[in-house]
Amino acid sequence: MGGTGRSGTHVVARLLGAHPAYYRFASELRFIANPGGLCDLVEGRTDVARFAARMRGPWYGARPAVLGSTVDAATIEAALGRLEADMAGGADAAAVAFAHDLLDPIAARHGAGAWIEKSPPNVMRAGTLLRLFPDMQLIHSVRDGRDVACSVTRLRWGPTDVDEALDWWARKLERAFAACESLPEGRVCVVQMEDLLTRDRDRQYARLLAFLDLPDDPAMRAYFDASLTPERAHIGRWREDVPAERRAAFDAHYQRLAAGLRARGRPVAADDEPVTA
Image (cartoon, rainbow, N blue to C red; front, side):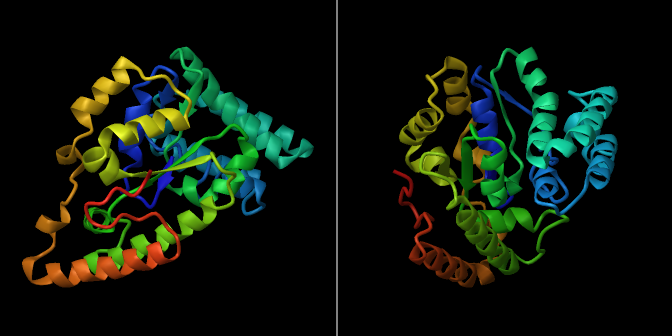
């Protein structure tokens, strides 16, 4: 799962993670698609030593909530040793084995046959991910850029002005759509959050099940009905967050960007109109 950031990947991951077929990692794993991760390793943008340093540091030791709650340090060290040894036989096979060595046993312990990884950059690395994981199904979460912009400005890593954040959203979204174009038909599902949570709920829920070839499940449906609501997702938050004197100009800015994306064939919703069939 991926998106621009602040686009609903965690919301959709929690929904699918309620299904017994999947194990959902509580945090973004980061080591697959983020800069310096496995995708960069197989593309020659990093090496095993630098990858291992990140695994021991920001992706594990410095932020134990990411992997430390599910994988012990000895298991990671053993996997890193196998990764280094396996590189002689090809980076792709070594990277795939490393990911499955770490993640498959966790899913299996929870009775699941597959796992969900929800780092936003996954959509940007769609082609490489499919090469590494040929059974991958990718969900691209898209959210109203006005709400994304207001959410991003509250965080330390994004733009601090809402109009700058709108431009950031449009650039990232275009890059994500362009990257996903390399995937064969049936391998990527675009989920417009406003469709899923408000204006087309049941049909979008059914789309997700059909895309993943899953039967409906009472626990997943109960989570959808109780927890995936417009209020919890802060849909329309921009109307409160943007100062009144800037609101009209901010909305006009968004409409120009959204129209430009639609003109390039990107499925971005007009206000109050479902976008995904």
